[in-house]
Image (cartoon, rainbow, N blue to C red; front, side):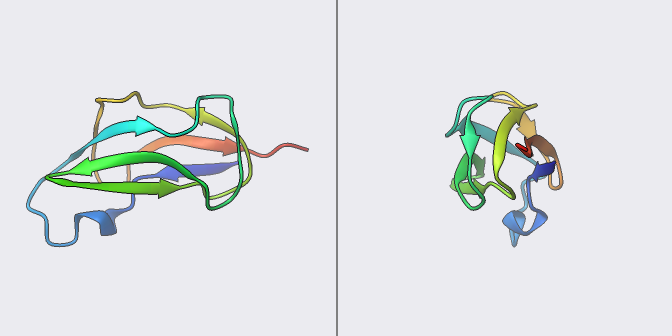
Length: 81
């Protein structure tokens, strides 16, 4: 299992303490490959794409519109064997 975490580096020079999960690009339960863009997070006026850290089935913990902070785990990818 691989966690989908909002990377702290996205905040760079931003003064905003949190961002917003804009949308999931893959539905919960869908199959993804490592590197696929699975979600978008908005921080201030910039939208950032989050890539899948592994291959398998997507489990979404957060919903679009949820507030996310640096390091927040928004979902995971469950390995399929």
